[in-house]
Each structure stands twice: as C-alpha cells, then as structure tokens.
View 1 (tube, one colour):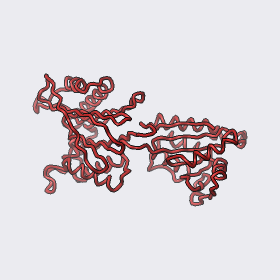
View 2 (view 1 turned 90 degrees about the horizontal axis):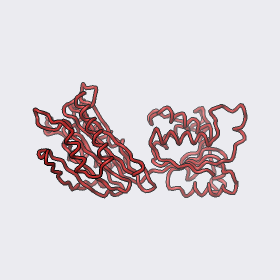
View 3 (view 1 turned 30 degrees about the horizontal axis):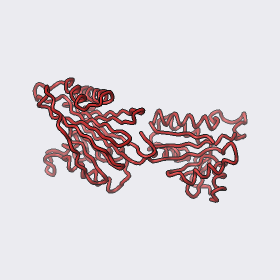
View 4 (view 1 turned 45 degrees about the vertical axis):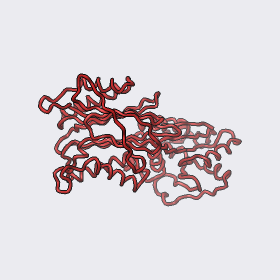
Length: 393
C-alpha cells in the first residue's frame, strides 16, 4: 500500500518443521484500501502438523476479522481469548499471535500473546516499545499486551515465532537457542550492510540464518515477518508521442523532473525527449541478439526500449506470474524487473496514432498502445498489488 509520501512494505518467510508437510505457523495480511490500513498477524499453533496449522489459521483469521471491524484492542483480545481453546495438559493457549494494525500515516497499534516480543528498528537501533497488560476478568492467567506508537519513515517492525528465537537450542554455542537478542542483532547487521534491503530479502536472510542454526533442518515450525514503513520507490513509464505536438515539452519536463526511475518505451517518444532536453541517444548492442529490438541509452533515463511490441511482451510476462529470478534478459524482462522493484508506477501515454500499427498485417498482439497499458495496469494492481496511475497526453 502506498501514497506519495509513505509505503508499507510487508513480507514474511515460513518453514515447516522437519518431516512435516504443513506449517503450524501462519502469517496473514490484509489491506483496507479505503481506510489506508494494513493488518497483519503472525500466529503459532501449539505443536506441529495439521492440528497446529488449523489452530494457527483459526487464530489469524479471527484476529484479522476482529481488528478490521473493531477499534478497541481490549475487545479484540477478549473476542480472541473467548474463542481460543486451552490445552488441558499444559494449561496454555492452543496458539499464540502477534497482531499489527498500521495505517499510512504511521499510526501503529499492536497486540501480543505468547510470541517473542515485537521489535521496532529505527535505522539499525532498536527502539523500546512500551506495552500495557490487558487484564480480562475471565482470563486472568493469560498475558496479553497491547501498545500504540507513531512510526517514522524508515522504521521496521520485526516479529517471529519461537522457531526463530529457539533455533539451535541445545548446541554448545547456543544452549538456550539463538534468542531474540541475537536475531535482532542479525537483522541490524543486515540493515547496516544494506540500508535499503527489502522486507522480502530481510525475512529470507533471517530464515536462512535460523535454519543454519538447526543444521538446515528446522526443529520447529519457523516464521518471521518484516513491515517496513518507508518512502515509496517510484517508476515512470513514458510511451507514445503526445496527440498535440505543443505538449511535447510537457512530456520532456516530466522526464527531467520525476523523482524516481524512468523508462521510455518507443523510438519516437525517446527522440522527442532527447531533442527537447538536448541529450543524445545511443543504442545498447549488448542485447542485440535477444529476439527483440535492442534497448538504448540516454542521460537521466534508466531504460529506453521499443514501444508497443515490447509492452505487449511485458503484459505477457506479468500475466504468466513470472518471478524475478526467471525474468528473461531482454528489454521486456528489464522493464518488469524495474516494475517489481517499485511501489508506485506511473504511466504517461501519448495518444498520437502510429500509422505503422494500423497495417492489417500487424500481429494481433500488437494492440493499440492504450489498450496494452490498460492491461498492464490491471495486472499490476490485481495480481501484484502495485499502486498505479495513468495520464494520457
């Protein structure tokens, strides 16, 4: 979820206990677009396997439902506790949870029960989260904490199940397990090495370290999640010349002043921008044998490609659900790679008709530029949850 000033980057990593096919940890997130809120919950079911998975899923689903419809944290906690069963042998809840409610202004609310305490990192420094104990008359023996805080741009929230903090337990070097403190220190080290590390890469690295502690075989269901409240990464894609030539300067101004990465799709579009900005264009022949028109280069522009044909290939790649690792090394793959690294994706689409595309022998997939862009926008919003905008010139 993104605005012009803030983006909430949410990701997680899960791993089943060794020899189990179903994970007893669950992470769910839900965006309430009209309220500008992200709800996220990490739940750890007691034990492992199917039973733990069912209990964790039940808890996570209830937590999201209650949080989305009720504003009082005590009511959240009471509803969840009244529903959760208690283990007759161990006299503890059948699942633990960490529930996070964060809006695009940075207002944070959270509730914790049984999981390692939530972590707030501001840069590489841990900030202490002030918690209050929720006392419920019916469940006086259950420790439930809640808190509120205003996040700053750049803050990260980390939450884990005990599969992370107890990984490596019993080894000579970590008899009590990895511990929350060491897991936080690992995250701080990763952020120190790369201040812009994504939530996906950070959770993957923490998970890899936890598995290494257990010699590659998780001794318990293991999960971690990261929520990064940061400035959005923006991308501008310009394609097609403006309908009225007098608006060429408007297009060039957007290319020179946009505060993010920039792509030009189309030779005519690139020529217009290069002429007005007085920047030369050179063809990049290192990708001349990819089966697509080669890209070009211009100062201040991250990528220049051919127009409608390349965009049609971009739409095909997005429709197939291709991952970053499997993207082809050609101009269409380069565009999708930049899309995957962006939060807000803006399109400026020129509406002057290219006569070459009206030829009856033109391939069917080479649709009108506007229709191709609409298809790409639909895929980005519905399949990849990006925020987009389209402006026609």
